[in-house]
Image 1 (cartoon, rainbow, N blue to C red):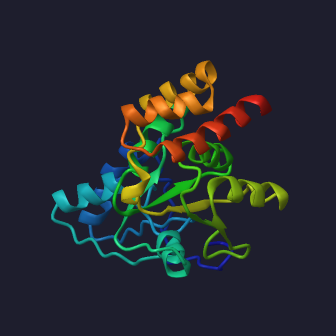
Image 2: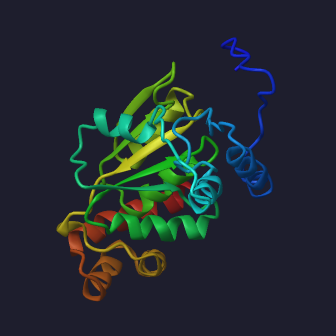
Length: 241
Protein backbone atom coordinates (compact mmCIF):
# COMPACT_ATOMS: atom_id res chain seq x y z
CA UNK A 1 0.00 0.00 0.00
CA UNK A 2 2.88 2.37 0.74
CA UNK A 3 4.41 1.59 -2.66
CA UNK A 4 1.15 2.57 -4.38
CA UNK A 5 0.61 5.61 -2.18
CA UNK A 6 -2.59 4.21 -0.69
CA UNK A 7 -2.91 5.81 2.72
CA UNK A 8 -6.68 5.34 3.02
CA UNK A 9 -9.00 6.94 5.55
CA UNK A 10 -8.01 7.75 9.11
CA UNK A 11 -7.90 4.69 11.31
CA UNK A 12 -7.12 2.26 8.49
CA UNK A 13 -4.56 -0.36 9.50
CA UNK A 14 -2.95 -3.55 8.28
CA UNK A 15 -3.35 -6.83 10.18
CA UNK A 16 -1.19 -9.86 9.38
CA UNK A 17 -3.36 -12.87 8.55
CA UNK A 18 -1.17 -15.90 7.92
CA UNK A 19 -0.98 -19.51 9.07
CA UNK A 20 0.46 -18.54 12.46
CA UNK A 21 -1.85 -15.58 13.19
CA UNK A 22 -5.14 -16.28 11.43
CA UNK A 23 -6.91 -18.05 14.29
CA UNK A 24 -6.00 -15.22 16.66
CA UNK A 25 -6.99 -12.27 14.44
CA UNK A 26 -10.25 -13.65 13.01
CA UNK A 27 -12.40 -12.66 16.06
CA UNK A 28 -11.24 -9.03 15.94
CA UNK A 29 -11.81 -8.87 12.18
CA UNK A 30 -15.31 -10.28 12.53
CA UNK A 31 -15.99 -7.75 15.28
CA UNK A 32 -14.81 -4.94 12.98
CA UNK A 33 -17.12 -6.16 10.22
CA UNK A 34 -20.07 -6.38 12.59
CA UNK A 35 -19.40 -2.79 13.69
CA UNK A 36 -19.74 -1.60 10.08
CA UNK A 37 -16.10 -1.45 9.02
CA UNK A 38 -14.82 -2.90 5.75
CA UNK A 39 -12.15 -5.62 5.78
CA UNK A 40 -10.16 -6.54 2.66
CA UNK A 41 -8.29 -9.85 2.60
CA UNK A 42 -5.34 -9.15 0.30
CA UNK A 43 -2.58 -11.50 -0.86
CA UNK A 44 0.77 -10.42 -2.31
CA UNK A 45 1.06 -13.69 -4.24
CA UNK A 46 -2.06 -13.91 -6.38
CA UNK A 47 -5.68 -14.72 -5.58
CA UNK A 48 -6.23 -15.20 -1.81
CA UNK A 49 -7.22 -18.65 -0.52
CA UNK A 50 -5.58 -20.59 -3.38
CA UNK A 51 -3.13 -22.42 -1.11
CA UNK A 52 -2.98 -19.23 0.98
CA UNK A 53 -4.48 -18.52 4.43
CA UNK A 54 -7.90 -16.92 4.71
CA UNK A 55 -10.32 -19.84 4.93
CA UNK A 56 -10.92 -19.39 8.67
CA UNK A 57 -11.83 -15.74 8.13
CA UNK A 58 -14.19 -16.48 5.24
CA UNK A 59 -15.82 -19.33 7.17
CA UNK A 60 -16.31 -17.13 10.24
CA UNK A 61 -17.81 -14.36 8.11
CA UNK A 62 -20.37 -16.76 6.64
CA UNK A 63 -21.20 -18.11 10.08
CA UNK A 64 -21.83 -14.53 11.25
CA UNK A 65 -24.10 -13.88 8.24
CA UNK A 66 -21.68 -11.26 6.91
CA UNK A 67 -21.35 -10.54 3.21
CA UNK A 68 -18.28 -11.99 1.46
CA UNK A 69 -17.40 -10.31 -1.87
CA UNK A 70 -14.71 -12.02 -4.00
CA UNK A 71 -12.40 -9.86 -6.12
CA UNK A 72 -10.13 -12.31 -8.00
CA UNK A 73 -6.50 -11.40 -8.36
CA UNK A 74 -3.84 -12.83 -10.72
CA UNK A 75 -4.18 -16.61 -10.98
CA UNK A 76 -1.16 -18.81 -11.69
CA UNK A 77 -3.49 -21.78 -12.25
CA UNK A 78 -5.57 -20.15 -15.00
CA UNK A 79 -2.47 -18.52 -16.51
CA UNK A 80 -0.79 -21.92 -16.83
CA UNK A 81 -3.89 -23.53 -18.34
CA UNK A 82 -4.34 -20.67 -20.82
CA UNK A 83 -0.85 -21.19 -22.28
CA UNK A 84 -0.73 -24.98 -22.02
CA UNK A 85 -0.19 -26.95 -25.28
CA UNK A 86 -1.06 -30.26 -23.59
CA UNK A 87 -4.63 -31.61 -23.28
CA UNK A 88 -5.79 -30.13 -19.96
CA UNK A 89 -9.54 -30.71 -19.79
CA UNK A 90 -10.73 -31.87 -17.38
CA UNK A 91 -8.24 -30.76 -14.73
CA UNK A 92 -7.98 -30.73 -10.94
CA UNK A 93 -6.02 -28.41 -8.65
CA UNK A 94 -4.13 -29.97 -5.72
CA UNK A 95 -2.16 -27.04 -4.27
CA UNK A 96 1.22 -27.83 -2.71
CA UNK A 97 2.58 -31.36 -2.34
CA UNK A 98 3.67 -32.67 1.09
CA UNK A 99 7.16 -31.52 2.03
CA UNK A 100 8.36 -34.94 3.22
CA UNK A 101 9.79 -37.15 0.52
CA UNK A 102 7.85 -40.33 1.23
CA UNK A 103 4.48 -38.59 1.46
CA UNK A 104 5.26 -36.46 -1.60
CA UNK A 105 6.09 -39.50 -3.74
CA UNK A 106 3.02 -41.33 -2.48
CA UNK A 107 0.73 -38.44 -3.45
CA UNK A 108 2.46 -38.03 -6.80
CA UNK A 109 1.87 -41.73 -7.50
CA UNK A 110 -1.83 -41.29 -6.81
CA UNK A 111 -2.08 -38.16 -8.95
CA UNK A 112 -0.22 -39.81 -11.84
CA UNK A 113 -2.92 -42.49 -11.99
CA UNK A 114 -5.81 -40.02 -12.23
CA UNK A 115 -7.76 -39.66 -15.50
CA UNK A 116 -7.62 -35.85 -15.48
CA UNK A 117 -4.75 -33.38 -15.71
CA UNK A 118 -3.33 -32.21 -12.39
CA UNK A 119 -2.18 -28.69 -11.52
CA UNK A 120 0.20 -28.23 -8.57
CA UNK A 121 2.07 -25.39 -6.92
CA UNK A 122 5.72 -25.91 -5.99
CA UNK A 123 8.34 -23.85 -4.22
CA UNK A 124 11.85 -23.07 -5.53
CA UNK A 125 13.28 -25.18 -2.70
CA UNK A 126 11.55 -28.37 -3.83
CA UNK A 127 10.90 -28.06 -7.57
CA UNK A 128 13.98 -30.04 -8.62
CA UNK A 129 13.25 -32.80 -6.09
CA UNK A 130 9.65 -33.02 -7.30
CA UNK A 131 10.85 -33.30 -10.89
CA UNK A 132 13.31 -35.98 -9.81
CA UNK A 133 10.47 -37.94 -8.19
CA UNK A 134 8.36 -37.58 -11.34
CA UNK A 135 11.28 -38.69 -13.51
CA UNK A 136 11.45 -41.86 -11.45
CA UNK A 137 7.72 -42.54 -11.24
CA UNK A 138 6.65 -41.50 -14.75
CA UNK A 139 9.70 -40.73 -16.90
CA UNK A 140 7.75 -40.33 -20.16
CA UNK A 141 4.79 -38.32 -18.85
CA UNK A 142 4.48 -34.89 -20.58
CA UNK A 143 4.61 -31.93 -18.17
CA UNK A 144 4.07 -28.19 -18.51
CA UNK A 145 5.77 -25.91 -16.01
CA UNK A 146 5.27 -22.20 -15.38
CA UNK A 147 7.64 -20.02 -13.36
CA UNK A 148 6.75 -16.64 -11.82
CA UNK A 149 3.40 -16.56 -13.64
CA UNK A 150 1.77 -13.14 -14.17
CA UNK A 151 5.03 -11.53 -13.01
CA UNK A 152 7.99 -9.88 -14.75
CA UNK A 153 10.09 -13.02 -15.22
CA UNK A 154 7.26 -15.32 -16.32
CA UNK A 155 8.53 -18.33 -18.27
CA UNK A 156 7.14 -21.68 -19.48
CA UNK A 157 8.82 -25.05 -19.90
CA UNK A 158 7.49 -28.12 -21.78
CA UNK A 159 8.81 -31.68 -21.67
CA UNK A 160 9.37 -34.69 -19.44
CA UNK A 161 10.48 -34.29 -15.83
CA UNK A 162 14.12 -34.95 -16.76
CA UNK A 163 13.98 -32.40 -19.57
CA UNK A 164 12.38 -29.75 -17.37
CA UNK A 165 14.97 -30.24 -14.63
CA UNK A 166 17.77 -29.90 -17.18
CA UNK A 167 16.23 -26.66 -18.55
CA UNK A 168 15.92 -25.14 -15.07
CA UNK A 169 19.47 -26.08 -14.10
CA UNK A 170 20.97 -24.87 -17.38
CA UNK A 171 19.36 -21.45 -16.96
CA UNK A 172 19.87 -21.32 -13.18
CA UNK A 173 16.08 -20.85 -13.02
CA UNK A 174 15.13 -23.00 -10.01
CA UNK A 175 13.95 -19.89 -8.20
CA UNK A 176 10.63 -18.09 -7.86
CA UNK A 177 7.21 -19.75 -7.61
CA UNK A 178 6.14 -22.60 -9.86
CA UNK A 179 2.88 -24.00 -11.20
CA UNK A 180 3.09 -27.48 -12.72
CA UNK A 181 0.64 -29.34 -14.95
CA UNK A 182 0.89 -33.13 -15.08
CA UNK A 183 -0.94 -34.54 -18.08
CA UNK A 184 -3.65 -37.12 -17.47
CA UNK A 185 -2.85 -40.81 -17.21
CA UNK A 186 -3.45 -42.86 -20.34
CA UNK A 187 -4.72 -46.42 -20.24
CA UNK A 188 -1.34 -47.51 -21.57
CA UNK A 189 0.44 -45.87 -18.64
CA UNK A 190 -0.81 -48.43 -16.15
CA UNK A 191 -1.15 -47.64 -12.45
CA UNK A 192 1.84 -46.20 -10.61
CA UNK A 193 1.93 -47.77 -7.16
CA UNK A 194 4.66 -46.46 -4.81
CA UNK A 195 5.12 -49.78 -2.98
CA UNK A 196 5.26 -51.66 -6.27
CA UNK A 197 7.79 -49.18 -7.59
CA UNK A 198 10.08 -49.76 -4.61
CA UNK A 199 9.83 -53.53 -5.12
CA UNK A 200 10.71 -53.06 -8.79
CA UNK A 201 13.82 -51.06 -7.87
CA UNK A 202 14.98 -53.89 -5.62
CA UNK A 203 14.30 -56.46 -8.33
CA UNK A 204 16.38 -54.47 -10.81
CA UNK A 205 19.26 -54.34 -8.34
CA UNK A 206 19.11 -58.06 -7.56
CA UNK A 207 18.07 -59.61 -10.90
CA UNK A 208 19.02 -57.10 -13.57
CA UNK A 209 16.74 -55.21 -16.00
CA UNK A 210 15.55 -58.10 -18.16
CA UNK A 211 14.53 -60.56 -15.42
CA UNK A 212 13.12 -57.78 -13.23
CA UNK A 213 10.94 -56.50 -16.10
CA UNK A 214 9.71 -60.00 -16.92
CA UNK A 215 8.73 -60.69 -13.31
CA UNK A 216 7.10 -57.29 -12.68
CA UNK A 217 5.07 -57.60 -15.89
CA UNK A 218 3.47 -60.71 -14.37
CA UNK A 219 2.77 -58.89 -11.09
CA UNK A 220 1.36 -55.70 -12.61
CA UNK A 221 -0.69 -54.45 -15.57
CA UNK A 222 2.31 -52.81 -17.23
CA UNK A 223 4.03 -54.09 -20.37
CA UNK A 224 7.35 -55.88 -20.22
CA UNK A 225 8.95 -53.52 -22.78
CA UNK A 226 7.91 -50.43 -20.80
CA UNK A 227 9.22 -51.98 -17.58
CA UNK A 228 12.49 -52.94 -19.25
CA UNK A 229 13.05 -49.33 -20.39
CA UNK A 230 12.31 -48.14 -16.86
CA UNK A 231 14.67 -50.75 -15.40
CA UNK A 232 17.50 -49.45 -17.59
CA UNK A 233 16.86 -45.92 -16.35
CA UNK A 234 16.80 -47.09 -12.74
CA UNK A 235 20.06 -48.96 -13.15
CA UNK A 236 21.64 -45.92 -14.79
CA UNK A 237 20.46 -43.69 -11.98
CA UNK A 238 21.90 -46.09 -9.44
CA UNK A 239 25.29 -45.97 -11.11
CA UNK A 240 25.24 -42.18 -11.24
CA UNK A 241 24.46 -42.04 -7.53
